[in-house]
Amino acid sequence: MSKKTRRLRIAFCGDREIAVAVLEHLLNHDTKPLALIVPEKSRASHADALVNLCSFLPPDNILVGQAFREPAGIEMLSQLDLDFIIGVHFPYIVPPEVLSIPREGVLNLHPGFLPYNRGWHTPSWAILEDTPIGATLHFMDEDIDTGDIVYQKQLSISPADTAHSLYQKLIQLEFEVFKEAWPKIVSGTYVRKPQDPGAGTMHRRKELFTPNIQQIDLNAEIKANDLLKKLRALTTNQISEAAYFVTKGKRYRVQVIIQEE
Image 1: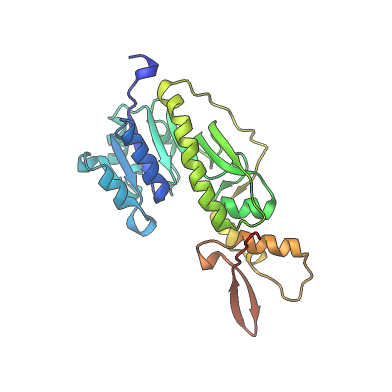
Image 2: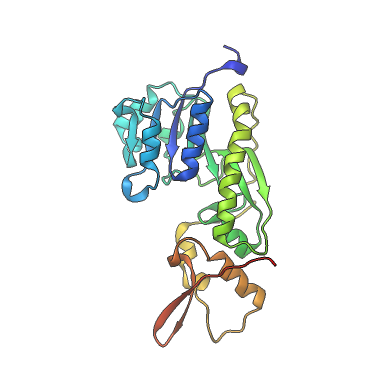
């Protein structure tokens, strides 16, 4: 079979609405996963929707939670003769023994313009640190978001953007990136671009929740631009991620709405 007409053997892992959109796109383009990996319910938002889309799979080929790391899960995936594992907002680190299973590798869709904003809360850090933002399809390796880039697009940040509004734009851009990259994946004409290990930025999940990031000191002098950046960057869909100030022993969370006239 030529590369132009090859039928890829894939497994799919992910969560969130973007994962549903990507899986639907694959199914509409005649690519059915041979296995599905979803988070356990406590960490999932769209696992049920993904499982419903893969109703053609036998139950043993649907792995939930950490089952993909266990010997039985690894054995099942190893027997499928996979070309790729496709990951979309999959909330687990993929260990080396799983990364090595597919012939061509594990692809990951990331809401960041790598090498900038590896890791968590990409729109928040892009606003806070004035770093480039976008969406990237890349290969996973043993580190966090450091694998070879396949395709990416950059997005401009509006002065009216909060982390929440920017994230909505990033989700749309991620889908564009995947749709535009997929034909080259299918044809085998994609190019792997290594990342510069000394470039970019990386943040872990817990970093956004530290007082030096979230707290507003009511007695400190601060430039209006810096305060506005903090409020924009910490306005998400989660009030626990918002900036706060403390007065009379009570904590008050602050979110902002910005509208261009």
